[in-house]
Length: 191
Image (tube, rainbow, N blue to C red; front, side, top):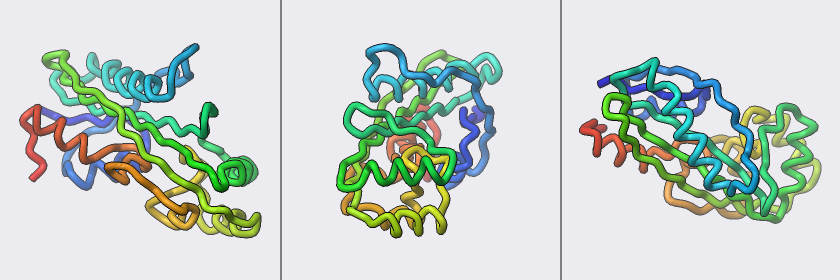
């Protein structure tokens, strides 16, 4: 059975390549807006499911991997900053605080219409940094297309006092430890 990654994210593609050598990529087109009164965890789980399920007609005999990440600071959702000015504002706003990353993952078997779905969370406690340090980070590693405005797998690690969770890949956008268990339940051995 073929495996399909329901994402246009280069970062998710790179993560999946660590455990699966051959897979297809198909980018779903869905509205990623938060629904009224929807929790961040529910939003991440719903979007991961929708991304995988919507591609089932295009891939009728496949295991489709959907994933979506929601970053939040308290009751505020953090978005991809898209430029240096917004990245600076967002990173400055996060100083000394804990940002939660909720990454939904869904493995949808389009042949059986069965799915496995969950949300994995990770916490990042930001260090107190000067404006100069924040600007230096942005100049050295622009992460305008990343939720939170940083790349934890790169120099972004210097922004944090502490990170905690079950799988650091959650921060990049694809919880590999959980995905491996899901794939094994579908008879796909990674090792």
